[in-house]
Image (cartoon, rainbow, N blue to C red; front, side, top):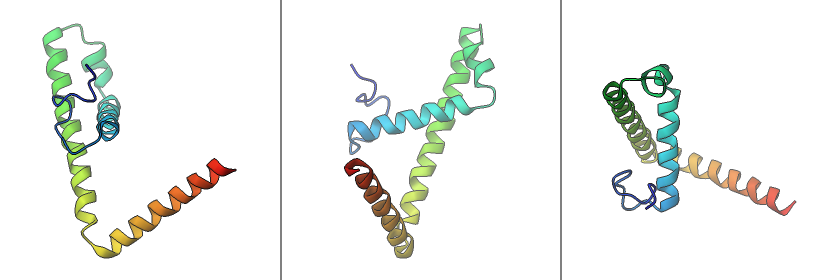
Length: 102
């Protein structure tokens, strides 16, 4: 079974498999950026401490991802931000389409 489709990984049932994959990758990147991830998890010989450290990093990354998602949702409640955000997305998509047709 795919981890991306697993409810245990991401419980957002409204998210598509691609959205779940993107969130999972973002969480993994956050974990890997932790200053002492390498020593606390990758190089740690103590299984119990490694699992505890990894769980703490996962919890921290999931919370940070949730905070990011909520900040964007909150910002989009402001009509001026929403319009500017939508315009920026439209411009980026238009540039992408131009690159494809070139």
